[in-house]
Image (cartoon, rainbow, N blue to C red):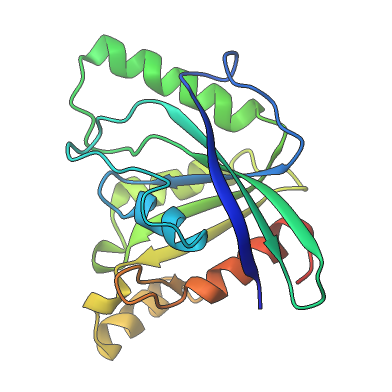
Length: 200
């Protein structure tokens, strides 16, 4: 089992050119506003308020960096940089600002060489939304051979077995997580470590 040793906030940045570079492998977290991205990051590192969510969907426009350290049962250590990207889909900003913001994000996601894993969070209750399908295609369009994409379906405690079956019919590789019930979090850590380092 993967255990969390520690985690801390590093910095916030508006763009690739203004972002610092770190020695650890990076994981980029994407998701629609209000999908539970901050809660998921907090659950992964066993902290309640490391990643802070905004009360106004789409308000957070900065790229937030966190460092987290893990170890497995064989005492192997894993250092990761968690990159929390702004939520998409509800941004209440001027069109000119939104265009600049999207351009900065696009450059960061495509040109940040240290990203090894993309985590796309999708609301399990609205699993087939067009915006999520587009994001999935967008990431896959430039995914390098040394990068991976994993889809996690959040708020799965709200679903019954029949509803979960519909999600699995839509995506046979769907990974369910619930931060409220702490379900699927241990498995998510294992998948993330394996996705970055190729072993657990």
